Amino acid sequence: MVDLSIVVPIYNEEDNVTPLHDRVVAALGDSGLDYELILVDDGSSDGTFPLLRELAARDRRVKVIRFRRNFGQTAAMAAGFAAAAGRVIVPMDGDLQNDPADIPMLCAKIDEGYDVVSGWRKNRQDTFINRRLPSIIANSLISRMTGVHLHDYGCTLKAYRREVLDGVNLYGEMHRFVPALASQVGARVAELPVRHHPRLHGTSKYGISRTTRVVLDLMTVKFLLTYSTKPIQLFGKWGIYTILAGVVSGGLTLYMKLFEGVSMNRNPLLILTAFLLFAGVQFIALGLLGEVNARTYYEAQGKPIYAVRERLNLD
Ligand code: UDP
Ligand code: MG
Image 1 (cartoon, rainbow, N blue to C red):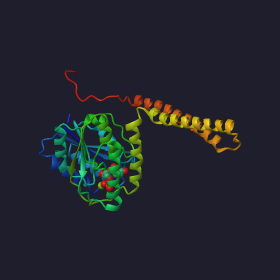
Image 2 (spheres, protein in one colour):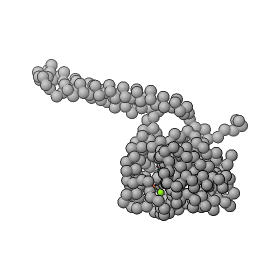
Image 3 (cartoon, protein in one colour):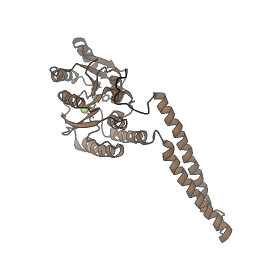
Image 4 (cartoon, rainbow, N blue to C red):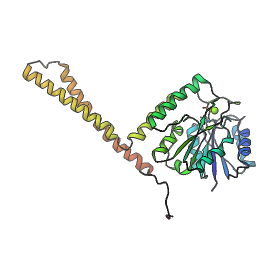
């Protein structure tokens, strides 16, 4: 088993892959860490793949996974994680914006006992209006909604103890939420400032449109974190309130008709009553469906409902 697996999603980075390999070797050469570099080619259409093949031929620590087409950065990361043999797994970008020189420091923090160490691009070298500003807003939103406070969820450079990733299924923009998902099952999370460089070669594959995707994925994560085990408590509560409101409005309707002689012909109260009773039943039904769904979700993944930090004298 190697100490460290570095996982790098790569999409059309022909000018960056060879310098990236050089920097990784330079950064980890004397660190005493036994590492592997997993390069995941996410369907590049430029000259990236032949270069990866060349790297793999001359350095046995380089492992390459090549996708059939472009599946996205998160999918590439997930493939790399699945192939990783290391005790610690470090994802990072392949465009030289993250600096491999920070890896030993992240690993040292893991050795202090943390399960997740997240990089913080304190001097982020991206444009303000369309990259840093949306990211500031997203980070405060994510921190507030997940209860795990990080300055920089979007930083790819992180370090994970491998067990942390075992139970995590990635999709969408989900890779950035791993610290929050991990923390839910008891992981110790730390954040450390890391270097960040401007992109010198090639272009960014993202623009502001990613912000919307991140926010929508955040809603899913929030739901998973809070209600995936108990959807009935979210929907059922509103179902009961709505039905109660329907009963009150129905009582009022009846009272007005019987004792005040108000005509109920085309009276909006009647419609309101019917609506509230109906909506309440719908809410409860939705909660029950959610329950069934949550159960299927956990069972399908064989996802345990607890996480053990250590075992003593057991296997
Ligand atoms: N990437 C990928 N698949 C994609 C888009 C990007 O593997 O569909 C890789 C890309 O090659 C880079 C990393 O993900 O290594 C981050 O992408 P980029 O630098 O474009 O994002 P930014 O730094 O601008 O957020
Ligand atoms: Mg980049």
